[in-house]
Amino acid sequence: MTITLTINGIEKKIGIAPGATLLEVLRHEGYVGVKSGCGSGDCGACAVLLNGRAVNSCLTLAVRADGASITTVEGLADGRNLHPMQKAFLDTGAVQCGYCTPGMLMSALDLLSRIPNPSDEEIREAISGNLCRCTGYVKQVEAIRAGAKAMRSERHD
Amino acid sequence: MALTHVRSVARPSTLGEAWNEKAARGEAARFFGGGIDVVLFTPPTVHTLIDLAGLDLRGVSQAGGGLEIGALTTMSDALHSPAVEAFANGFLCQVLRRVASPLQRNLGTLGGTIASAHPWSDVIPALLALDAELRIFSGESRSIRLEEFLADRAACCEAIIEAILLPMGAGERIATYQSFTRTAFDISLLNVACSAHVDQGVWRDVRVVVGGRPGLAARQTSVEVRLEGAKPADLDLAAVARDASEQVDVRDDIRASAAYRRTLVDTLLLRCLKVLGGGGNSE
Image 1 (cartoon, rainbow over the protein chains, first blue to last red):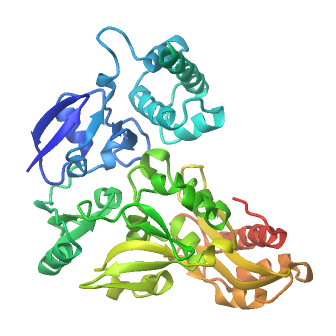
Image 2 (cartoon, each protein chain N blue to C red; image 1 turned 90 degrees about the vertical axis):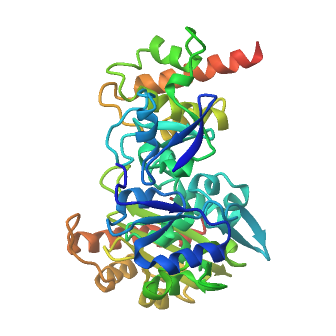
Image 3 (cartoon, rainbow over the protein chains, first blue to last red; image 1 turned 60 degrees about the vertical axis):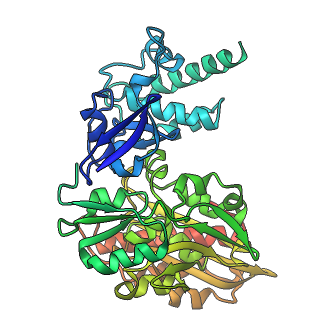
C-alpha cells in the first residue's frame, strides 16, 4: 500500500508493507538519524515529531502516519547552521555517544511547543521516555534549558 | 518490528463500515486506534488491521454536567484538556501523568487502553473509581458501565469503543490513586484507586478499586461496604486497610508474590483512605 508523508517539509509517496512501523519506513527512506533501539517504546531513541508531537516511531504503525507531517533530526538544521537546541546540546556537553540525542531533541522540541520556558521538573518529565546511558541526564536538562532560552531569544529578535 | 503477518489495512469511514469489516473477518482482524498495543501484542493469526482513525472519535466535551472523552483521544490530549483538569479536581490528569512516558501518551488513546484491558493499567482503576461508562458500537450504539464491559469481555471484545462517559456527579468526587512500580517507568505491581462523595463529613458512594492483583482491576465491594456511611475520624483506617489486604484476591506471578501484593494493598489503600479522609487529592 502507499502512504503520503511530509518528512522534514518534503512530501513523499511511499510504498509500505501494511504492518510496517514508522521507524522502519523512515530508516528505509534514509532517515537514519532516527535510531533503532529497544523496539518496544522503552528507550525513546526512535522518537520523531508526528504532527508536532514526539512519539516512539517503533510503536507507530506507518499507516497511522499517512498524511502526517514528520520531523526527524535531519530536518532540524538550516543548512550548516544547527538548530538552537542542537547547538545547546553540543555546547553543554549533553552529547556523549549520541545515540539518544535525536530522540532527546524531539522530546525537547515537543515540550517547548507547549511550554516555551519550562521548569527543570517539566524538562525531566518531558525526557522521561528517553534513556541515556552516558550522561546521567544532568547535561541534557541543562542543554534543554539553554536551548529553550536561545529559542525564546530567536523569536524576540 | 514490522507485523509481517498483516496483509491489509481497512480504513472505514463510518462505525457501520468498521463493524461490518470486523464481522466479515472475525478473529483474523483487529481494530486499532493509537496502535501501540497492536504493534506490541498482535497475534500472528491477525491478517487485517482496521484503522479507526477515520471515525470521528476524538475530543473532550462537557455534557449534562459530565464529561465525554472520545475513544481516540490520546492520553496527552486528555491530560492537557482544561475540561479533564477541572473534573474531579484533576484526578484523571494525576493518573494520566503516571502512564508510561510523554512519547507513548502522545500516541496511545484512552479507548485503546480500555480495549486492551491490561491488568497493570493505571487508567482503568481510575475510571472505575469515577463510575465511568462507555458508549460502544456493536451494530448500534449503546451505553454500558465500564465495570460491566470489563466483566463481560466475551460479549464486548468485538465492540468498538466510541467514547468514555464520566457521569454527572463524578466530578464532585474526592478521588485518589496510588501505585507501586519497581522503577518510575515500569508498569504497576499493584495499584489502588479510591473515590467518595463527602456529605457532611460522611463518606457516600465509596469506590475502592484494586488493579494489578495481577488480575484485571476490580472494585472491592466488601471494603466499600465497610466504608459506606462512615465518618473517617471514627474509623481505624489502618485496621480497614489491614483487613482489606486479607480479603482482596491477589496472586503470585513472575513479578511479585501474593504476600508482597497483600502488603502493597495494605500500604497503598491506607494512603488512599487518608487522602479521602482529609478531603484532598493526592497522587
